[in-house]
Image (cartoon, rainbow, N blue to C red; front, side):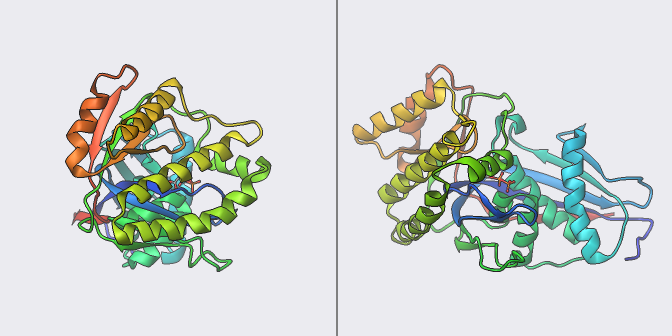
Length: 335
Ligand code: DP6
């Protein structure tokens, strides 16, 4: 590949997502192939903006994350991902990456999902590749499994695939963001960096949990039931299945050796409150990723009531309200 002196900046925006049917476990760690399918919704309010510039003048890839040079571990993870694009396009110039989240990274709000989705698009475009959504999803997956879903907006199904190469372990869109208006209230209960990341946690579960095999088998039924609930716009069913998949995933983490507990006391307080509210007739359900933050699902007509209910709860550090968001896109290319 020829690099001109005046290189372009290529900027992409991707939105984070939350899995309703969770991904936990890999069938191939090197290629990052998930052991189970997953289903997510993309989040309008949580996004990453990433600018990529190919540079002959740099010695190595640089990564500026939220206006600060990234730590070496993060830089190396990004650099290994960029190698995939360099290999494909047969060039060996370093890249300059600037990435910004519009949400607190330390709060564990799936920054790797929007981060790798934005990077996959911006870096491939900067390198002159015009990848299809399918190809972008496969590329993003190699950065982070959940990132494969953030290529698409709306309701998204990630397939574990059948091919050894991982070429069909990609996501596709079930419906776009205008299909069904659902709301999510993200309740941040801690801003501390979590001790065990998703990658490490799921690899430990695969190796040590006595429930791992059943998790894989039972997820097949969860996926088809969730697809059905989405087709029928059956919110009750969607909510019930989301809680079930979430608790099953956390039970799997807890049954690993040593057991992993991602929750704190406020996480449990909120879970109980969601269930009490539901008993009183309000349509609310929860889901939780590998961290202590609780995401409360509801329909748009109930969001102000739900916000009120969680307004004065001690232990909630931040509240973010999100609707369903769009696919990844290029914001601009300039010299
Ligand atoms: C609990 O996508 O962060 O959020 O592929 O190792 O980068 P890697 O894992 P990651 O795991 C996400 C786990 C989860 C559930 C989900 O998003 O499906």
